Amino acid sequence: MKKIYAYILLAATLMLSACSGFLDIRKEATVPTSGMDYSNSQNIFQPVSAAYAAMRWSSFQSNEGISLSYLTLNEIISDDAEKGSESADGPDIKEIDEFRFTPTNPHINTVWIKFFDIVSAANYAIEAMDRFTSSLQNEDDLAYAAKCKGEAFVIRAYAYFNLVRLFGTVPVIKGTMSSEELAAMKVSSVEEIYKFIYQDLDAAIAALPEKWDGYDGRYDVYTARALKAKVALYNKDWNEAAAQADEIIACERFSLLPDFRQVFAVEGENSSESLMEIQSTCLGQTAGAVPATSYSYVQGPRQNQPSNMQGWGFNVPSSSLVKFLKDRGDEIRYATTILERGTVTPEGDAILDKCANPYYNGKVYTPSRYNIMGNNSYGLEHNVRVIRYADILLIYAEALGNSAPVGAKSGKSADDALNEVRTRAGLGTVSATLDNIYEERRAELAMEENRFFDLVRWGKAAEVLGPLGFKAGKNEVFPIPSSQRQLNPNLPATTGYTY
Image (cartoon, rainbow, N blue to C red; front, side, top):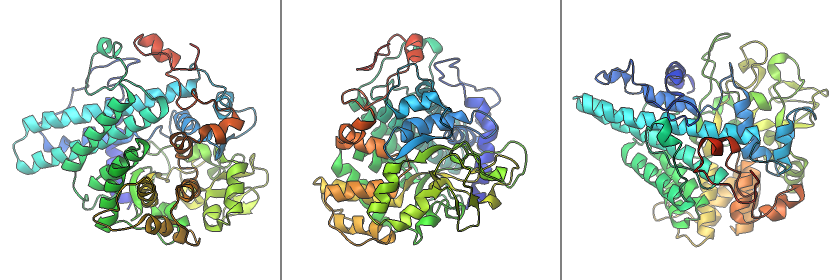
Protein backbone atom coordinates (compact mmCIF):
# COMPACT_ATOMS: atom_id res chain seq x y z
CA MET A 1 0.00 0.00 0.00
CA LYS A 2 2.90 2.32 0.69
CA LYS A 3 4.14 2.03 -2.89
CA ILE A 4 0.77 3.07 -4.32
CA TYR A 5 1.23 6.29 -2.42
CA ALA A 6 4.82 6.78 -3.46
CA TYR A 7 4.07 9.13 -6.34
CA ILE A 8 2.47 11.53 -3.88
CA LEU A 9 5.58 11.51 -1.74
CA LEU A 10 7.82 12.03 -4.73
CA ALA A 11 5.75 14.96 -5.91
CA ALA A 12 5.90 16.37 -2.40
CA THR A 13 9.67 16.17 -2.40
CA LEU A 14 9.84 18.06 -5.69
CA MET A 15 7.43 20.73 -4.48
CA LEU A 16 8.64 21.24 -0.93
CA SER A 17 11.37 23.69 -1.81
CA ALA A 18 8.79 25.82 -3.58
CA CYS A 19 6.64 26.36 -0.51
CA SER A 20 8.87 26.09 2.53
CA GLY A 21 9.13 29.85 2.89
CA PHE A 22 5.47 30.84 2.80
CA LEU A 23 4.19 32.79 5.71
CA ASP A 24 7.55 32.22 7.36
CA ILE A 25 7.49 34.81 10.08
CA ARG A 26 11.24 34.39 10.39
CA LYS A 27 12.15 35.19 6.76
CA GLU A 28 10.08 35.78 3.65
CA ALA A 29 6.32 35.79 3.46
CA THR A 30 5.45 35.96 -0.20
CA VAL A 31 3.41 33.49 -2.19
CA PRO A 32 5.60 31.52 -4.63
CA THR A 33 3.41 31.68 -7.70
CA SER A 34 6.08 31.54 -10.39
CA GLY A 35 5.95 28.52 -12.63
CA MET A 36 2.49 27.34 -11.57
CA ASP A 37 -0.06 27.10 -14.37
CA TYR A 38 -3.48 27.14 -12.70
CA SER A 39 -5.23 26.32 -15.94
CA ASN A 40 -3.48 22.95 -16.13
CA SER A 41 -5.42 20.32 -14.19
CA GLN A 42 -2.32 18.13 -13.91
CA ASN A 43 -0.92 20.67 -11.42
CA ILE A 44 -3.87 20.55 -9.01
CA PHE A 45 -2.38 18.17 -6.48
CA GLN A 46 1.10 19.70 -6.34
CA PRO A 47 0.46 22.36 -3.66
CA VAL A 48 -1.36 19.80 -1.50
CA SER A 49 1.51 17.38 -2.01
CA ALA A 50 3.87 20.03 -0.67
CA ALA A 51 1.67 20.42 2.42
CA TYR A 52 1.87 16.67 3.02
CA ALA A 53 5.64 16.92 2.68
CA ALA A 54 5.80 19.66 5.30
CA MET A 55 4.27 17.23 7.79
CA ARG A 56 7.26 14.89 7.54
CA TRP A 57 9.14 17.08 10.04
CA SER A 58 12.59 16.53 8.62
CA SER A 59 14.08 14.65 5.73
CA PHE A 60 16.78 12.08 6.18
CA GLN A 61 19.14 14.12 4.03
CA SER A 62 19.05 17.22 6.25
CA ASN A 63 17.71 18.62 9.49
CA GLU A 64 17.26 15.26 11.22
CA GLY A 65 17.18 17.17 14.49
CA ILE A 66 13.74 18.64 13.73
CA SER A 67 12.18 15.23 14.36
CA LEU A 68 14.10 15.10 17.62
CA SER A 69 12.73 18.50 18.66
CA TYR A 70 9.21 17.27 17.94
CA LEU A 71 9.72 14.15 20.04
CA THR A 72 11.26 16.16 22.86
CA LEU A 73 8.19 18.37 23.30
CA ASN A 74 5.61 15.70 22.53
CA GLU A 75 6.95 12.57 24.25
CA ILE A 76 10.24 12.92 26.13
CA ILE A 77 8.59 15.41 28.49
CA SER A 78 6.14 12.71 29.64
CA ASP A 79 6.63 10.06 32.30
CA ASP A 80 6.55 7.36 29.60
CA ALA A 81 9.85 8.43 28.03
CA GLU A 82 13.34 9.58 28.87
CA LYS A 83 15.93 11.48 26.85
CA GLY A 84 18.04 8.42 26.02
CA SER A 85 21.19 8.42 23.88
CA GLU A 86 24.51 9.09 25.65
CA SER A 87 24.30 10.93 28.96
CA ALA A 88 26.20 13.96 27.62
CA ASP A 89 24.12 14.22 24.42
CA GLY A 90 21.28 16.69 24.13
CA PRO A 91 21.63 18.91 27.22
CA ASP A 92 18.82 21.10 25.86
CA ILE A 93 16.64 18.00 25.67
CA LYS A 94 17.55 17.10 29.25
CA GLU A 95 16.33 20.54 30.34
CA ILE A 96 12.90 19.73 28.91
CA ASP A 97 12.89 16.19 30.30
CA GLU A 98 13.47 17.67 33.77
CA PHE A 99 11.21 20.76 33.35
CA ARG A 100 14.18 23.14 33.66
CA PHE A 101 13.67 24.77 30.26
CA THR A 102 13.33 28.46 29.51
CA PRO A 103 11.85 30.35 26.52
CA THR A 104 15.30 30.30 24.88
CA ASN A 105 15.42 26.51 24.56
CA PRO A 106 16.13 25.83 20.85
CA HIS A 107 13.83 22.80 20.61
CA ILE A 108 10.83 24.89 21.60
CA ASN A 109 11.62 27.42 18.88
CA THR A 110 12.19 24.68 16.31
CA VAL A 111 8.78 23.13 16.97
CA TRP A 112 7.06 26.53 16.84
CA ILE A 113 8.68 27.26 13.47
CA LYS A 114 7.94 23.85 12.02
CA PHE A 115 4.26 23.81 12.87
CA PHE A 116 3.86 27.27 11.37
CA ASP A 117 5.68 25.99 8.29
CA ILE A 118 2.96 23.34 8.02
CA VAL A 119 0.35 26.09 8.39
CA SER A 120 2.13 28.03 5.66
CA ALA A 121 2.12 25.11 3.24
CA ALA A 122 -1.54 24.37 3.96
CA ASN A 123 -2.52 28.01 3.49
CA TYR A 124 -0.79 28.12 0.14
CA ALA A 125 -2.53 24.91 -0.94
CA ILE A 126 -5.93 26.29 0.09
CA GLU A 127 -5.38 29.49 -1.86
CA ALA A 128 -3.99 27.56 -4.82
CA MET A 129 -7.15 25.46 -5.00
CA ASP A 130 -9.16 28.67 -5.27
CA ARG A 131 -6.92 29.77 -8.15
CA PHE A 132 -7.46 26.46 -9.92
CA THR A 133 -11.21 26.80 -9.41
CA SER A 134 -11.11 30.22 -11.05
CA SER A 135 -9.04 28.97 -13.98
CA LEU A 136 -10.52 25.56 -14.80
CA GLN A 137 -13.76 24.75 -16.61
CA ASN A 138 -14.07 20.96 -16.49
CA GLU A 139 -16.51 19.81 -13.80
CA ASP A 140 -14.36 16.83 -12.84
CA ASP A 141 -11.33 19.08 -12.42
CA LEU A 142 -13.32 21.50 -10.27
CA ALA A 143 -14.59 18.65 -8.12
CA TYR A 144 -11.07 17.30 -7.70
CA ALA A 145 -9.74 20.72 -6.65
CA ALA A 146 -12.49 20.95 -4.03
CA LYS A 147 -11.48 17.57 -2.60
CA CYS A 148 -7.82 18.56 -2.57
CA LYS A 149 -8.75 21.71 -0.69
CA GLY A 150 -10.34 19.46 1.93
CA GLU A 151 -6.98 17.70 2.41
CA ALA A 152 -5.29 21.05 3.00
CA PHE A 153 -7.91 21.94 5.62
CA VAL A 154 -7.09 18.71 7.48
CA ILE A 155 -3.37 19.48 7.40
CA ARG A 156 -3.89 23.03 8.68
CA ALA A 157 -6.19 21.75 11.43
CA TYR A 158 -3.56 19.18 12.42
CA ALA A 159 -0.96 21.94 12.76
CA TYR A 160 -3.17 24.19 14.85
CA PHE A 161 -4.30 21.33 17.09
CA ASN A 162 -0.68 20.68 17.94
CA LEU A 163 0.09 24.36 18.39
CA VAL A 164 -2.79 24.96 20.80
CA ARG A 165 -1.89 21.89 22.86
CA LEU A 166 1.76 22.88 23.01
CA PHE A 167 1.57 26.65 23.45
CA GLY A 168 -2.02 27.58 24.28
CA THR A 169 -2.54 30.98 22.69
CA VAL A 170 -0.92 31.45 19.26
CA PRO A 171 -1.62 33.62 16.20
CA VAL A 172 -4.20 32.22 13.80
CA ILE A 173 -2.89 32.82 10.28
CA LYS A 174 -5.65 32.18 7.76
CA GLY A 175 -3.89 33.08 4.53
CA THR A 176 -0.81 34.53 2.91
CA MET A 177 0.42 37.78 4.39
CA SER A 178 3.38 40.09 4.08
CA SER A 179 6.28 39.88 6.51
CA GLU A 180 5.17 43.12 8.09
CA GLU A 181 1.61 41.85 8.58
CA LEU A 182 2.84 38.62 10.10
CA ALA A 183 5.15 40.44 12.48
CA ALA A 184 2.17 42.41 13.76
CA MET A 185 -0.10 39.41 14.41
CA LYS A 186 -1.67 39.02 17.83
CA VAL A 187 -2.50 35.73 19.50
CA SER A 188 -5.98 34.25 19.53
CA SER A 189 -7.53 32.73 22.63
CA VAL A 190 -7.62 28.98 23.10
CA GLU A 191 -11.38 29.06 22.50
CA GLU A 192 -10.93 30.96 19.23
CA ILE A 193 -8.27 28.52 18.06
CA TYR A 194 -10.46 25.49 18.73
CA LYS A 195 -13.30 27.20 16.87
CA PHE A 196 -11.00 27.78 13.90
CA ILE A 197 -9.89 24.13 13.92
CA TYR A 198 -13.53 23.00 13.98
CA GLN A 199 -14.29 25.24 10.99
CA ASP A 200 -11.42 23.74 8.99
CA LEU A 201 -12.46 20.18 9.83
CA ASP A 202 -16.13 20.84 9.06
CA ALA A 203 -15.08 22.20 5.67
CA ALA A 204 -12.91 19.13 5.14
CA ILE A 205 -15.74 16.75 6.09
CA ALA A 206 -18.01 18.46 3.58
CA ALA A 207 -15.41 18.31 0.78
CA LEU A 208 -13.52 15.03 1.13
CA PRO A 209 -14.45 11.66 -0.37
CA GLU A 210 -15.13 8.66 1.84
CA LYS A 211 -12.07 7.05 0.31
CA TRP A 212 -9.48 7.85 -2.33
CA ASP A 213 -9.76 4.86 -4.62
CA GLY A 214 -6.32 3.36 -5.22
CA TYR A 215 -4.46 5.89 -3.08
CA ASP A 216 -4.10 4.59 0.46
CA GLY A 217 -2.68 7.19 2.80
CA ARG A 218 -4.40 10.29 1.42
CA TYR A 219 -6.59 12.01 3.97
CA ASP A 220 -10.30 11.38 3.45
CA VAL A 221 -13.53 12.24 5.27
CA TYR A 222 -12.78 9.73 8.01
CA THR A 223 -9.37 11.28 8.60
CA ALA A 224 -11.14 14.59 9.13
CA ARG A 225 -13.68 12.97 11.44
CA ALA A 226 -10.94 11.21 13.42
CA LEU A 227 -9.00 14.43 13.88
CA LYS A 228 -12.16 16.26 14.91
CA ALA A 229 -12.96 13.52 17.44
CA LYS A 230 -9.51 13.93 18.96
CA VAL A 231 -9.67 17.73 18.90
CA ALA A 232 -13.07 17.59 20.61
CA LEU A 233 -11.68 15.21 23.26
CA TYR A 234 -8.96 17.68 24.19
CA ASN A 235 -11.50 20.50 24.09
CA LYS A 236 -13.70 18.48 26.49
CA ASP A 237 -16.49 18.68 23.94
CA TRP A 238 -17.72 15.20 24.83
CA ASN A 239 -20.81 15.09 22.62
CA GLU A 240 -18.84 16.08 19.51
CA ALA A 241 -16.05 13.62 20.31
CA ALA A 242 -18.58 10.80 20.69
CA ALA A 243 -20.51 11.80 17.58
CA GLN A 244 -17.46 11.83 15.31
CA ALA A 245 -16.13 8.58 16.77
CA ASP A 246 -19.57 7.03 16.32
CA GLU A 247 -19.54 7.91 12.60
CA ILE A 248 -16.19 6.15 12.20
CA ILE A 249 -17.20 3.08 14.18
CA ALA A 250 -20.52 2.75 12.35
CA CYS A 251 -19.03 2.92 8.86
CA GLU A 252 -17.45 -0.53 9.51
CA ARG A 253 -14.49 0.25 7.28
CA PHE A 254 -12.05 0.33 10.18
CA SER A 255 -11.06 -2.42 12.57
CA LEU A 256 -8.28 -3.42 14.92
CA LEU A 257 -5.62 -5.61 13.36
CA PRO A 258 -5.61 -8.99 15.15
CA ASP A 259 -1.86 -8.77 15.84
CA PHE A 260 -0.79 -5.69 17.83
CA ARG A 261 2.76 -5.99 16.52
CA GLN A 262 1.50 -5.81 12.94
CA VAL A 263 0.02 -2.36 13.59
CA PHE A 264 3.52 -0.88 13.69
CA ALA A 265 5.14 -3.06 11.06
CA VAL A 266 5.97 -1.70 7.62
CA GLU A 267 3.44 -4.20 6.25
CA GLY A 268 0.81 -2.72 8.55
CA GLU A 269 0.99 0.81 7.19
CA ASN A 270 -2.21 2.41 5.90
CA SER A 271 -4.13 -0.60 7.20
CA SER A 272 -7.72 -0.98 8.37
CA GLU A 273 -6.59 0.42 11.72
CA SER A 274 -5.09 3.59 10.25
CA LEU A 275 -7.00 6.86 10.04
CA MET A 276 -4.06 9.24 9.77
CA GLU A 277 -0.41 8.58 9.03
CA ILE A 278 2.59 10.60 7.88
CA GLN A 279 4.14 8.72 4.98
CA SER A 280 7.84 7.84 4.76
CA THR A 281 9.58 5.75 2.13
CA CYS A 282 12.84 5.28 0.23
CA LEU A 283 10.90 4.40 -2.93
CA GLY A 284 13.06 1.29 -3.22
CA GLN A 285 16.20 3.39 -3.75
CA THR A 286 19.55 2.66 -2.17
CA ALA A 287 20.91 6.19 -2.65
CA GLY A 288 19.82 9.72 -3.47
CA ALA A 289 17.08 12.04 -2.26
CA VAL A 290 14.03 10.23 -0.89
CA PRO A 291 10.76 11.37 0.74
CA ALA A 292 11.58 9.81 4.10
CA THR A 293 11.38 11.24 7.59
CA SER A 294 14.00 10.80 10.30
CA TYR A 295 11.31 10.31 12.98
CA SER A 296 12.19 6.64 13.49
CA TYR A 297 15.89 7.06 12.79
CA VAL A 298 16.52 9.42 15.71
CA GLN A 299 14.92 6.79 17.99
CA GLY A 300 16.91 3.82 16.66
CA PRO A 301 19.17 1.79 19.00
CA ARG A 302 22.33 3.73 19.83
CA GLN A 303 25.66 1.94 19.11
CA ASN A 304 23.95 -1.09 17.57
CA GLN A 305 25.34 -3.06 14.62
CA PRO A 306 25.18 -3.37 11.67
CA SER A 307 25.05 0.33 10.92
CA ASN A 308 21.65 0.13 9.22
CA MET A 309 20.23 -1.10 12.55
CA GLN A 310 21.21 1.90 14.62
CA GLY A 311 20.10 5.46 15.15
CA TRP A 312 20.61 8.29 17.61
CA GLY A 313 18.92 6.45 20.48
CA PHE A 314 16.74 9.30 21.79
CA ASN A 315 13.21 9.08 23.21
CA VAL A 316 13.48 5.77 25.05
CA PRO A 317 10.78 4.11 27.17
CA SER A 318 11.08 5.07 30.83
CA SER A 319 11.48 2.65 33.70
CA SER A 320 8.05 3.90 34.82
CA LEU A 321 6.43 2.74 31.57
CA VAL A 322 8.26 -0.59 31.68
CA LYS A 323 7.06 -1.22 35.23
CA PHE A 324 3.50 -0.13 34.39
CA LEU A 325 3.19 -2.58 31.52
CA LYS A 326 4.81 -5.42 33.46
CA ASP A 327 2.71 -4.87 36.59
CA ARG A 328 -0.56 -5.08 34.66
CA GLY A 329 0.53 -8.23 32.81
CA ASP A 330 0.37 -6.43 29.46
CA GLU A 331 2.63 -8.91 27.70
CA ILE A 332 1.45 -8.40 24.13
CA ARG A 333 1.80 -4.64 24.17
CA TYR A 334 5.04 -4.81 26.16
CA ALA A 335 6.62 -7.05 23.52
CA THR A 336 5.88 -4.49 20.79
CA THR A 337 6.37 -1.24 22.69
CA ILE A 338 9.60 -2.08 24.53
CA LEU A 339 12.64 -3.01 22.45
CA GLU A 340 15.11 -4.44 24.95
CA ARG A 341 18.87 -4.29 24.81
CA GLY A 342 20.52 -7.72 24.63
CA THR A 343 17.66 -9.41 22.77
CA VAL A 344 16.92 -10.64 19.26
CA THR A 345 13.68 -9.52 17.61
CA PRO A 346 11.22 -12.03 16.09
CA GLU A 347 12.48 -10.79 12.71
CA GLY A 348 16.05 -11.83 13.61
CA ASP A 349 17.68 -8.46 14.36
CA ALA A 350 20.00 -8.26 17.36
CA ILE A 351 19.82 -5.35 19.79
CA LEU A 352 23.30 -5.67 21.22
CA ASP A 353 24.33 -5.56 24.86
CA LYS A 354 26.64 -2.64 24.07
CA CYS A 355 23.75 -0.35 23.09
CA ALA A 356 23.70 2.80 25.20
CA ASN A 357 20.22 2.37 26.71
CA PRO A 358 18.40 -0.61 28.22
CA TYR A 359 15.21 0.07 26.20
CA TYR A 360 14.25 1.63 22.88
CA ASN A 361 10.93 2.50 21.25
CA GLY A 362 9.71 -0.75 19.75
CA LYS A 363 6.87 0.95 17.91
CA VAL A 364 9.36 2.43 15.43
CA TYR A 365 11.43 -0.74 15.11
CA THR A 366 12.15 -1.40 11.45
CA PRO A 367 13.67 -4.75 10.39
CA SER A 368 17.06 -4.58 8.70
CA ARG A 369 15.67 -5.84 5.37
CA TYR A 370 13.90 -2.48 4.96
CA ASN A 371 16.89 -0.32 5.85
CA ILE A 372 18.38 -0.40 2.38
CA MET A 373 19.99 3.01 1.96
CA GLY A 374 23.37 1.96 3.28
CA ASN A 375 24.72 3.15 6.61
CA ASN A 376 22.46 4.90 9.10
CA SER A 377 19.23 4.28 7.24
CA TYR A 378 17.25 2.86 10.14
CA GLY A 379 13.51 3.45 10.03
CA LEU A 380 13.22 5.37 6.79
CA GLU A 381 10.45 3.03 5.61
CA HIS A 382 8.46 3.55 8.79
CA ASN A 383 5.33 5.71 8.62
CA VAL A 384 4.38 7.86 11.61
CA ARG A 385 1.07 6.70 13.06
CA VAL A 386 -0.91 9.82 13.97
CA ILE A 387 -4.43 8.46 14.69
CA ARG A 388 -5.36 4.79 14.94
CA TYR A 389 -8.75 3.11 15.26
CA ALA A 390 -7.82 2.01 18.79
CA ASP A 391 -7.53 5.70 19.70
CA ILE A 392 -10.99 6.32 18.25
CA LEU A 393 -12.50 3.54 20.37
CA LEU A 394 -10.88 4.96 23.48
CA ILE A 395 -11.99 8.50 22.61
CA TYR A 396 -15.52 7.18 22.24
CA ALA A 397 -15.38 5.35 25.57
CA GLU A 398 -14.02 8.40 27.39
CA ALA A 399 -16.62 10.70 25.86
CA LEU A 400 -19.41 8.36 26.99
CA GLY A 401 -17.76 8.16 30.40
CA ASN A 402 -18.21 11.94 30.54
CA SER A 403 -21.96 11.68 29.87
CA ALA A 404 -22.01 11.86 26.06
CA PRO A 405 -24.91 9.80 24.65
CA VAL A 406 -24.38 6.35 23.15
CA GLY A 407 -23.75 6.66 19.43
CA ALA A 408 -26.97 6.64 17.43
CA LYS A 409 -25.31 4.89 14.48
CA SER A 410 -23.05 2.29 16.09
CA GLY A 411 -25.01 1.67 19.27
CA LYS A 412 -21.74 0.68 20.90
CA SER A 413 -21.40 1.14 24.65
CA ALA A 414 -18.35 2.50 26.46
CA ASP A 415 -17.70 -1.00 27.80
CA ASP A 416 -17.85 -2.40 24.25
CA ALA A 417 -15.35 0.12 22.94
CA LEU A 418 -12.90 -0.20 25.82
CA ASN A 419 -12.94 -3.98 25.86
CA GLU A 420 -12.52 -4.26 22.11
CA VAL A 421 -9.13 -2.62 22.61
CA ARG A 422 -8.31 -4.76 25.65
CA THR A 423 -9.30 -8.02 23.97
CA ARG A 424 -6.86 -7.44 21.11
CA ALA A 425 -4.17 -6.98 23.76
CA GLY A 426 -5.04 -10.34 25.34
CA LEU A 427 -6.58 -8.79 28.45
CA GLY A 428 -9.85 -9.54 30.20
CA THR A 429 -12.90 -7.31 30.18
CA VAL A 430 -13.43 -4.48 32.67
CA SER A 431 -16.06 -1.80 33.18
CA ALA A 432 -15.48 1.51 31.43
CA THR A 433 -14.74 3.70 34.42
CA LEU A 434 -12.73 6.80 33.65
CA ASP A 435 -9.77 5.43 35.60
CA ASN A 436 -9.82 2.24 33.53
CA ILE A 437 -10.03 4.26 30.32
CA TYR A 438 -7.16 6.50 31.39
CA GLU A 439 -5.02 3.45 32.17
CA GLU A 440 -5.87 1.83 28.86
CA ARG A 441 -4.91 4.96 26.91
CA ARG A 442 -1.50 4.86 28.53
CA ALA A 443 -0.99 1.17 27.74
CA GLU A 444 -2.35 1.22 24.18
CA LEU A 445 -0.92 4.55 23.01
CA ALA A 446 2.42 4.53 24.83
CA MET A 447 5.25 6.30 22.92
CA GLU A 448 2.74 7.77 20.41
CA GLU A 449 2.90 11.38 21.67
CA ASN A 450 -0.30 11.40 23.74
CA ARG A 451 0.67 10.85 27.36
CA PHE A 452 1.81 14.35 28.41
CA PHE A 453 -1.24 16.04 26.89
CA ASP A 454 -3.55 13.45 28.42
CA LEU A 455 -2.14 14.09 31.89
CA VAL A 456 -2.60 17.83 31.44
CA ARG A 457 -6.22 17.61 30.28
CA TRP A 458 -7.07 15.08 33.03
CA GLY A 459 -5.68 17.43 35.66
CA LYS A 460 -3.17 14.76 36.70
CA ALA A 461 0.05 16.32 35.44
CA ALA A 462 1.09 17.82 38.77
CA GLU A 463 0.48 14.53 40.57
CA VAL A 464 2.28 12.32 38.06
CA LEU A 465 4.95 14.66 36.72
CA GLY A 466 5.54 16.74 39.85
CA PRO A 467 8.34 14.43 41.03
CA LEU A 468 10.00 14.99 37.64
CA GLY A 469 9.91 18.78 38.02
CA PHE A 470 6.48 19.78 36.62
CA LYS A 471 5.03 22.93 38.19
CA ALA A 472 1.27 23.46 38.15
CA GLY A 473 0.17 26.73 36.59
CA LYS A 474 3.31 26.89 34.48
CA ASN A 475 4.25 23.69 32.67
CA GLU A 476 0.84 22.87 31.19
CA VAL A 477 2.05 24.67 28.06
CA PHE A 478 5.42 25.57 26.61
CA PRO A 479 6.49 29.22 26.53
CA ILE A 480 6.24 31.22 23.35
CA PRO A 481 9.89 31.23 22.21
CA SER A 482 11.96 34.30 23.07
CA SER A 483 13.17 34.64 19.49
CA GLN A 484 9.57 34.80 18.22
CA ARG A 485 8.72 37.56 20.71
CA GLN A 486 11.72 39.51 19.46
CA LEU A 487 10.38 39.25 15.92
CA ASN A 488 6.81 40.04 16.92
CA PRO A 489 6.42 42.25 20.04
CA ASN A 490 2.68 41.49 20.04
CA LEU A 491 3.32 37.93 21.19
CA PRO A 492 2.75 37.87 24.96
CA ALA A 493 5.01 36.46 27.62
CA THR A 494 3.80 33.04 28.73
CA THR A 495 2.70 32.91 32.37
CA GLY A 496 5.37 31.54 34.70
CA TYR A 497 8.35 32.13 32.41
CA THR A 498 11.00 34.85 32.55
CA TYR A 499 11.99 36.50 29.26
